[in-house]
Amino acid sequence: MQPFNARVGFRGQYRWSILNEDGSPGFAIDQLGRKQTGGEWRANLITQLGMNSVAPTDGGHGAGFGPPGRAYLHVGEGALVIETDSGAITASQSGTTVTASAAIFASTDVGDLVLWGSGETALISAFTDTTHVEVTASAIVAGGVFTIKRTSTDQLVSQVESGNSDGGFGASSSYSFDDPNQQVRGELTVTRVVTMTANRNLTEFGFSPDGTATNLHIVELFRDSGGAPIALTIPSGKKLRLDHTLIETAAWSLQAHEFDLQEYDVTDVPLSVTAATNASPIQITTNFPHNFSTGDQVNVTGVVGNTAANGIWTVTVVDSTTFTLDGSTGNGGYTSGGTVARHLSGNLFPYVTGSSVTGTAISKLFSRFVTLGDNYSGFYDRVLFSTNSQAAPAYPFTGVNTFIINHTEVNPGISYDNYVADSMEVGKSFTFNVGTANGNLYSIGFEGDGVGQVFKFTNPTYFTKDSNHTLTFRFVISWWWSF
Image (cartoon, rainbow, N blue to C red; front, side, top):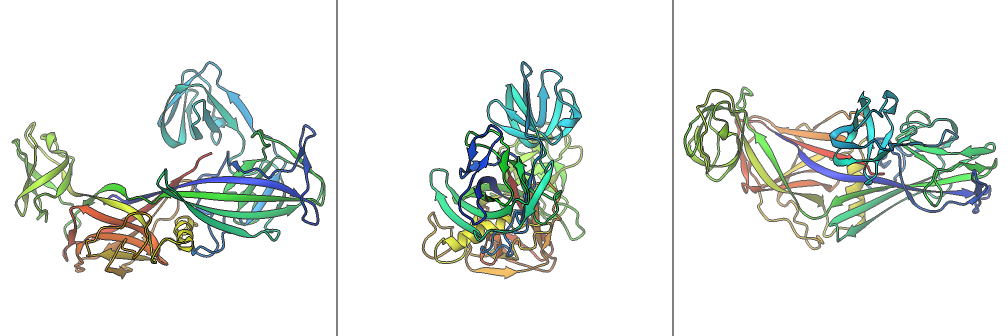
């Protein structure tokens, strides 16, 4: 079965300020002799990918937002960013491959940023040759000029101070609805303060879950009000305060989603094609009873010979092992191959308990998304399934919550993926075993402490899990970054 996908947007912003020894506002001097006090919020230019550890402290229950990922603030005096303009050389991006019009790339570019003239950014993950590199973010970018920004993206060049004090400022969270973009937006802010033990010329900072300087999850350069990298000269004894906000966005509107459910027999053989007539419509014969009903949708893949059978079709059932593909016309004799999966569609949406969406509930929703860690043990504890067909409510989600009603809560051996560094994807699975008959399922969801994600089926209205088959659902959270 293909996974349920819930996509959550992450981006960061920060602001720095200088404090005197008594905590009152102070200032630093930049390399041009200008007085700098900081205070302006700026978007992160450089973030370590795989933001699996920039999470709350409390297992995702919406209270403390600090460790592990931003427990320690590290500051350094390393080299500023080096920029190389492409000049007359242009490049384009297709998927994760960047192709330049002439030789410009080198193996040392891995870990650097490509900044397109049109505004897109990408992190170079692999060097192929002088005109080709691979990047971490898939995109389509037309040919144009670009800049390569070179600096460390996973550790400081030269650390001089670190610490985990919040200086009495603590942490905070908030949420808001962005109506024009149909999104709910959550902000988790962490404050860290470090004291200079000597005169320092700071240029870079980073966050880590511990005191290890090479275990950073966020790396950034100090910048002035115009966005240019700067070096801050800070006298001994003065303090640097740095506030970092992780901004998460998710759609509050219902999101259409489709996936395939591959059925297997008791010996784990998939539902397969044994014949596909060269006729109009094509008639499919399967290796065991398909359990489809007329009007269901299926996805046929891998048929050889009569390749016109491949694709997504609405079916008309002939008997327990045959059905026709509505509107199809054969294009040759069937020779071999082919599997059949049930094609389902529905709406994916956040699930929040309570009579209305409250600040506490939204905080839980977002912290539940980001509480991942290496094994993200706090990421949804239970599974819900419902045999009730009532529709989901409309925004603003006030009144009695009907996101998933008359549900049954189960824990049938939930398993999780081990997080792969920089993969920006994690998943949990649960399996209903042979012998478990769950009836007609209208909606399913993962839930943790009253917050989760739900999928409500619309095509067909429901499907039945019978006692002869296992049924596995895998729920995937994926995320990305922006600079």
